[in-house]
Image (cartoon, rainbow, N blue to C red):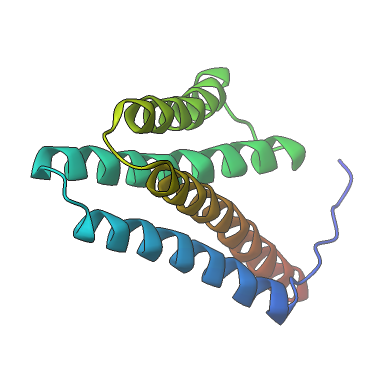
Length: 137
């Protein structure tokens, strides 16, 4: 098996990744806090965000594991992708049917996507940094 050399992520990319994750998640949640929705609606949108972040990290991890030759069951890999797509679909259906202005719907969609990107990038950076440290030992 060929050894993979890992590159330490730059400080700027690590910072940008964390900022993207927090900016997306915090903006989304501030929007929910201030939204004139019933609590059950807010709970729905919050759960979709949390589920989406977990699913996106699972996809990133399983894809990376496969690339590095670490066994990943087809079931876990498929479920990771299914859950990621499902969260996007659930958010889309929820926003499509919500009694919100188009700008509010766009705000939730964009902050959701930003948080998902941030979660994937933070997971990647964490894994790269840990792999680089273990190569140096």
